Image 1 (tube, helix red, strand yellow):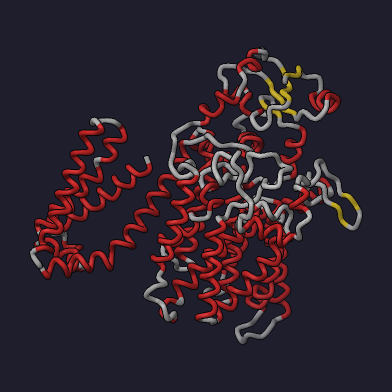
Image 2 (image 1 turned 180 degrees about the vertical axis):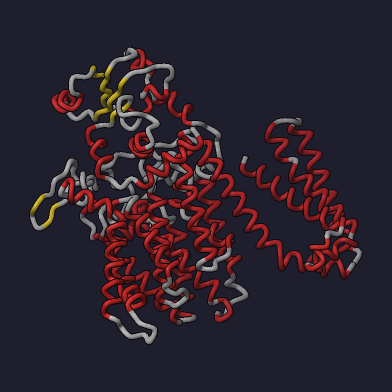
Length: 595
């Protein structure tokens, strides 16, 4: 569907433009090299024939015309169109040469990149709205949390595993709230994917309007990162949280290079992005804290100074109180957890000065010995460069969690940024900074050094999906330096935004090909298609309507046994992990136990 869809979109654009030129739409008179084609009837005819050849591809995809016959028709139209375009050139028509060369040089590449970006985004949108064929963590607790928050599925219908019930009590839930909102609005669980998609649109829009990066470059440079591309249409919450952190970091960068001023709008953007990140994932809270510490002095100076740029003590105190109030909003979840559970990161185990805080589950500790013995920065660097990261047991080289193998294996969680693309960005970044070492480059280099020094120290940092802000910011800074320092570069005819977009597009297409387009084109496979093979009909048959049942050892698919997905059935279901018979008996609380 992806290739026919691209062909159809290109065909529509070419046909529409040719028709508008032929009828002489006044708006096109300002674009002389296009409007001049109105006198080139044979060339316009050639463009129309090519557009028809491109558009007919969608007809073949749906099987309306026999494939062999359609190929002959398309070949005839395509060859006829090319001959019609080249005929004036063969006749040495200088005007046509002039117009065609201008079209190629001024429009074609940027238009192709823009249309390609729109097409791939539309394709990813279709995945996010129609497809429900990839789960893991999403089906274990993100969708169940979303359903509980919005009352879509009541606690009586479905009770989470004991550990997950406590995650619901303590974890940040903003992402799950928004996922449930989409589910409620569209009345389909697949719509929970839309949160990740709109987070991608948010960061692209931010790069476009704040960093003034062309739309096509912002889109393609991000989608060349496998982790971003894969998460953009799934119900995981890593991308939304990391988009918030990336916006916070990049806004701080713009403040320090004096490209934006600290006004009320910027202050609200900082608060919103910081609060968004902190209310989505625990892992991002330390990052948010560090960034806000770098912004705090500027806020106090801005709101604490008089018109004469002198510090006024009462105003400085007020600005400090304003920051304190904002912090209460940003860190509301850990503050609530301290008050209620005496642990800011409840239910995860936290130890401070030898004191173990109240908890319900241990911190993740399934790292392979060969990974554990590496220093944090080498461990993280190996993952970023994807050294020994791939495993043939995975369905594709890249997956959302670089999983599909046991948690305690060496390659689990390693990779996800496309090592070759990381190296290309590294070379470009070094070159841009050396060639024009101005304030923007200096601050960008300092920022990257700080991020590279601190990110590997975060918990489970080698699992790149948790901290993909590093790659998002890295790529964004490269695009920003390239676009804004273009006139200062000695090789500006080679280093152009559209050329880097082509490089990114090449990496993106390699990723798409290697993953069989699973993350790039819709299969129109609803969640029900995923549920059917992952729910045992034999187990369902053992559940009577009105019964209270405890289903053991079915994670991450326990949720799909809920009566919500099997109307008109009506029963109460609780899930539980199969840890031990004693554990199961205790947690199931007298319910009928099924495995």
